[in-house]
Image (cartoon, rainbow, N blue to C red; front, side):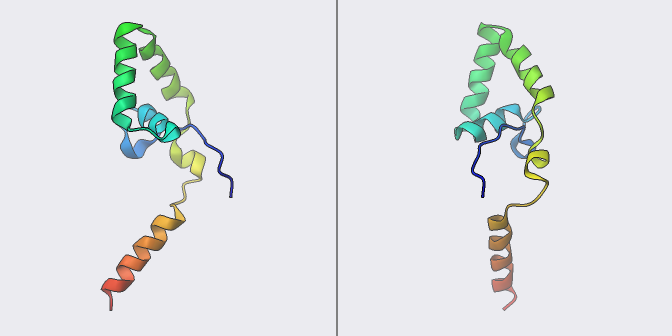
Length: 87
């Protein structure tokens, strides 16, 4: 399996466009920290807003990058949980 990191917008944990959520997942950080940094850059430098808008347009959605498939581990744990309830 390919363990290459890919930068994308994460619509599962988004507030506006999912850019900060995608960055947080890429850098393995808390999404709140990324959002705070983005707001600070937007107010202090001013180019943070432009960078966010450019990223919102350029970055692909997570479903497009991952092929729209569900994580196999999540699917297996879901099946194991449900199969134990049926017994």
